[in-house]
Length: 136
Ligand SMILES: *[C@@H]1O[C@H](CO)[C@@H](O)[C@H](O)[C@H]1NC(C)=O
Image (cartoon, rainbow, N blue to C red):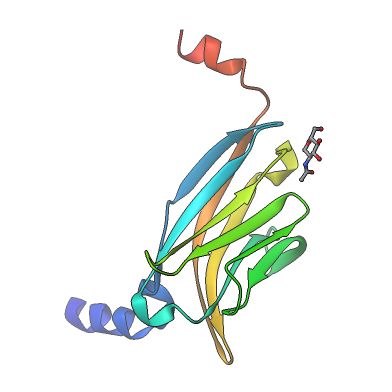
């Protein structure tokens, strides 16, 4: 039974194509970056990073960014993405964070007819001064 489940899971490309942190934190006005590692066979796929809308499995446009396989870097407003194909990871960054940036995100891979992603929870705290109270 468990073996069958495991085999089924391994056959779903999205489940193992990509790994990354479960959660990442930042502060209002600061920045954060997320590293997502992918398998060697995904080098030429389009990479994307986006924010999921609440309750819907779709990504919202204002924080959606992707790089086609022909590019290594792209910036759109406060969001950027950079691909390191030699070391098989891409890094997604957000600068000038606001509390509204908190929420579930996806770093993903796409090719015609298929996409796979890893979900990352982003939490933006009100201010860095909190560190003084939490970790004196
Ligand atoms: C981030 O904020 C700084 C200071 O307000 C501003 O100069 C800069 O253009 C902002 N960067 C982006 C990408 O919005």
